[in-house]
Amino acid sequence: VNLFTPYEQSESILGDLLEEFSDLESKSGMAFACRWYWRQSVRTVAHLIGSGFRGGPWKIAGFVVVGFLLSFFCGGRLEEAVVAVLNFGRHPHDNPYYTWSQAQARIRLIMYGDLVGHLLLSLSIGCIVAMAVKGREMVAAITLAFVLSVPAIGLSLVWSARHGPFLPLQLINPLNGSIMIVIGGGIVRKIRWTAASRTTPVKSAKSDEC
Amino acid sequence: MPGIDYLGEFEHIVVLALLRLGDQAYGVTVRQEIELRIGREVSIGAIYATLDRLEAKGYVKSRLGDPTPERGGRSKRFFRVSAKGMAAVNRTHRALQSMTVGLDLVRSCSW
Image (cartoon, rainbow over all chains, first blue to last red; front, side):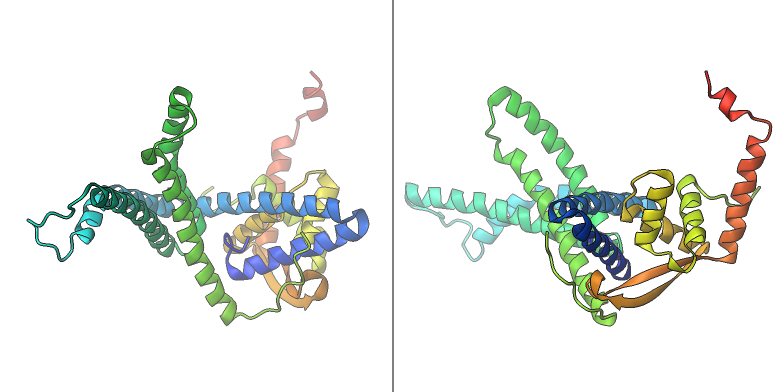
């Protein structure tokens, strides 16, 4: 709930959830209260995402397109960038490896470098999109992650049906990237939430019984 | 008519709940009142999304109460209907009444 609402509103919503939870716990027991709490929390978050999107659909759509283009163009240059980093300081005519194991090590470096670069790039894009859409950081990040992952999910399903459950890296990367975009949005949201809580201090929550 | 806004279905229900609850209208009581009166389980998020929209339109006003221990030290956010909100709920109510005049809803639904 904190991730999807402005600070003042999240305090009221969390307070309301906790008050009803305490009331239900005393009347119907902990198990029932916990079930109610999680059901309410999930429905509340779903509503907040929906209302967040409806509150500024064009702005969110615009920055999602920007994020998509960034991901498309920068993602395409990633391998070149990784190779450029690995070759940094080396003379262009130098042979980078001398033995088979050195060649394998270099290929592994490029592969892992590409993966790490892809994750960092996605995290950065998530942060950029979230910073641009103030107040609806998570909605924008989730929308972008959804847009990027839908083709990969579709292709993954087709691949799994034809070739079995093990997916190639090209299909897993967009899914990892989508998760990193959401994490990026969450980081920006959390930073802003913490900044808002410093300017409007309130007492801390009682406990996390569930 | 341009410039005249009517309340949506759920907005109407929420404003009527605020009017029923008076000074005791905040998230929990509004949610429980709606659940009690119309038997529809609504989420706290739906209530707040609607209340925020109504506040942005100037139909309701909110104030923070004192923090209470059963809420983990968090404040209640009390809501009340503004004069503009009263005008909107009356306008919506009249519009619904005029649209239903002459309709025998029970009979027309009996088929």
